Amino acid sequence: MVEKEKEKEKEECEPSKKKKKKEEKEEMKIADLPGIGPAAVEKLEAAGIFDLMGIAVLGPKELSELAGLGEAVARKAIQAARKMMDLGFQDGLEFAEKREEIFHITTGSRELDNLLGGRGVETKAITEAFGSYGSGKTQLGLSLAVNCQLPLEKGGAEGKAVYIDTEGTFRPERIRQIAEAKGANPESVLKNILVARAFNSDHQILLIDKVGELIKNGEPVRLVVVDSLTAHFRAEFSGRGMLADRQQKLNRYLHNLMKMAEQFNLAVYVTNQVMANPAMMFGDPTTAIGGNIVGHASTFRMYLRRGKKGSRVSKLIDSPNLPDNECVFFVGAAGVNDQDSGE
Image (cartoon, rainbow, N blue to C red; front, side):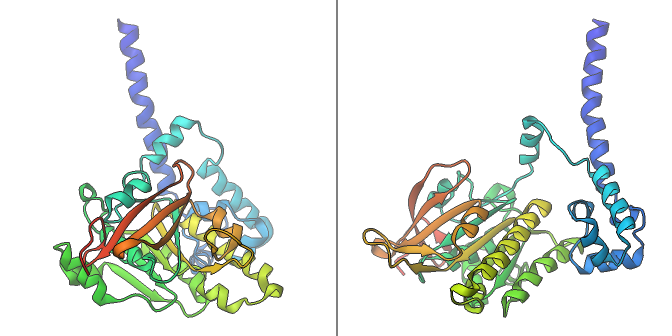
């Protein structure tokens, strides 16, 4: 009996030790690394690197250029960051525990939520919606920006939204309309949506670093909407001769989005433009812009189109854990929903 009690005590102590270790890792800052002084910290933060993970994944040459350090000092700092982070493998059970941190943000439509696994758009993932104009991509983004502020029990994430507008589609009056229809205070809802108008692809890329700064300054960001992902890249890199450059830049941008989603446990929702594939003889010729690079980077991909009697149809094209399926939803005064409002 005594031995069994001792074993139980050991088991109870182990999780608390793990928690202490996690807390210690979280307390460690960039300034704690050898050779990283206040000036180097400032330069790194200006480059969008705020934590040990940002240092651990860099190469010595890259870190020395960003922070103005010698390569030998940069190498030591990277090694120290990797030791502190304890980078390596973990078993499936530990990974499953980490997955419990994920939040879900309701779309406003039960049908659309079910298509995405039952609870809506999830954090630590990129959800992409592509379709022609008027298919409901922007309306879904605006609805999510409002819904992410809801309490957890109502399908929200109790956080703020960042809206990166590349096409001038963000409308405060539409947010007010959705908020009023949901019985929320329109002014406070608007206050919790941080909007930036991106004027070119470089500006769009820079705004991702700004999200890291907002979170570091205490903003509880739970959602980043990019509407649309490819508009500037498509306009600035035209023709086959510039295709490789465009795809490389787009690839780097998507990797930064995914890293940000993982690092800060937030949801990323992106809208994407389409084109008609002239080689398609039969069926729907609509194809998403960005090719395989966008397809592989997105965790969940949805194709939106207009349906009958004012409805919208969403088809799940790709997901790591859900079957291909489709559903019908509507867009009304309260944003995305399941009922035809007759508007």
